[in-house]
Length: 115
Image (cartoon, rainbow, N blue to C red):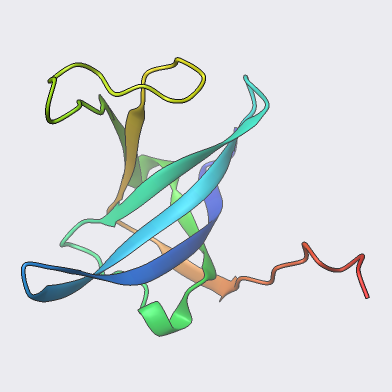
């Protein structure tokens, strides 16, 4: 296990109650389950966050400067856990980052094999 994690960060501007703010997300590969998992990414006040104009980008984060927060998503009407189409419980996953370093712009290679 390495001391740093490189992650592709995607960002977008979101408006809520008349205010606009940036929201960030990423996908990381889980080696145990061999699946890609989506995460919201939150940057703590003690560090800057990437400029939306620089997103998507690749950043490097020391493992010691990040932590994961998971919670079950609850249906507002029934107060029961919300369910995915496959019957599993919906989980909200947030990665909190307190230190990071910009590595490079993200380059999408998904269409490299097409003309």
